[in-house]
Image (cartoon, rainbow, N blue to C red):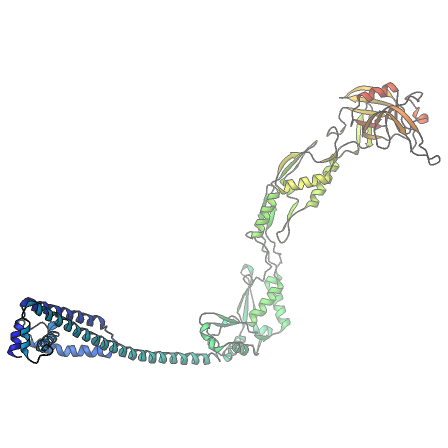
Length: 616
C-alpha cells in the first residue's frame, strides 16, 4: 500500500472510522446469524457425518496452537471475528484504492478540503458497502438451498427402496399363506364341534375313523343316574362322504386374515351307520325312560283366599322322546362321549317358571280384577268380591288372562231366580186367619239382568267398591216373602170377599161377585197391582164373531184396572146381590163387581201401583 494511501486513510477521524467498522461488523454478524439458522441439520445427510470428522481432525491442530496457560497470544484475534475481518479489510482496501472517476492520480483526494465534501464521499462509500453485502447474501442462501434439495432426493430414493422391499416381502408371505389355506382349514375352524384349525380334509377323515374304535356314549340322567351306549352294541361304523372336502372348497384361501379374528364353524354331515333297532332298544332301556313319567307343569297364578300368588312350576321326570332321540343321534355322529339329558333339555320342561314375566303379569292382572267389591242390598247382603271374582278369571296355558263373562251371566241368572218374585208362589194370611198360597200374576221383583250385567262387569274391571241394588225391570214393596208389604188389596175368590189393608190394618172390606167359573170368564188368581184408575169408563167386551159387535158395552162410575186384559174393580149396580155363590150363576166376565158405595170408597183410597192379591 502506498504512503499516500496510508496517509490519506489516516485523514479520516477516529470517530468516523469506529462508526464504519461497527456498521460493517453488524452487517456481517446478521448475515452470519442467518446462515446458521437456515442451515438445518439432517442426520440422513451423508455430509453430516463427514463434517463431524473434519471438525474432529481440525480440533487437535487448533488445540496445539493454544498456549499451555490457556491465554491467547498477543495480537491473536477471536476465531469468530477472524472469519469476517479479512473481508472487511479487503473491502476497505478496495475502497481506499479506487480513485474518483475521471482522475488517474491520487492527488484528487485533495479536493475534499472541507467537512461537507468528506461527508458526501462517506455516504457514497456506505451505499457501495451495502450493495456488496446484499450481493453476497443471496449467494450463500442459494448454495444452502441446493444442498438441502440434494439431500432430500437421496432420502426419498432410500425410502422408496425400503418400502418396495417390505411390500414385496409381505405380498410373498400373504400369497404363501393363502396357498397353504387352499388345502388346509382356516384357523379357528370347528367341524361338528371339534377344532380342526390348519388341518386337511384327510386329517378330519382320519379323526372321524379313529373315533369309531372303542366309542362309548355316557348318558347322564337325573338323580345322578347314568347309562352307556357302546359303539359295538349298535354296530357303529363311519361312512365317508364329500361334506368335508366341500367345506374346504367353500373356504376362500385369500381371506385367511379374517379367520384370525373370527370363529368359523362348519356343520358337516358325518355319516355313521348303526343298527337302528339296537339303538332304539338301548334308548328304551335307559333308566330315565323306564322311570315314572311325571309330566312337567308350568308355574301359574293361584288364588290363596286373599289374592293370586304364583304357584311354582313342577319339573317332572317325563322324557321328551323326540329330543332324546335327536340328541343321541347327534352325539354319536359327532363322536361326543357324554350326553347330559338335563343340559340338552331331553326332559319335558315347563313352559313357564316362577320367574317368567308372563306369569307375573298374569298374576297382577287377575289381582286387579279381585280389587272390586260390589254389595247388593237384598234380604241378604249379596257380595261380589275377590272370593267370587277369583272364580271368574283364569289364565290359559300361554298366560293369557280371561274374564269369564258367561260365568257372570250365569251368576246373575241365579241371583235373579233368588230375588225375582214375579209369578212365584207366595203365602198370605187373610184377616180372618186363613193361610193361602198364591202364584202367578205380574207383581213383584224382577231384576234387569242384561243391564245389571254391564254394570257389574264394568265395576269389576275398574276395581270399584260399591253398595247398590241391581237394575230392575220392576220393583215390589219389600224384599220379603210377602213382597207386597203391608198396604194392599186382597180378594178371596172362595169367600167372595175383599179387603183393603192399609199399614197392616183393614181399611175397607166387602162382599163381591167375581168371574163366572169357566175358563173364559173366571177371575185369575195371582199378585197384581193397580194399573189404571178412572171415573165413568165404558167397559167393552170382545167382538162376537156372529154379530161383529162387542159382547157388551157397560158404563161404570169407578174403574180400577188390575190387568191389561181387562180385569179390574168397578161398581156393578146391575147385580142383585154380592157374596155367597152368586158368582157361579151370575158371575162377571172376570172383573171384581162391588157395591156402588164400596167401589166409590175404594176408588177414593187406592193409589196407582197398589198390590192386589187374588187367591182361593
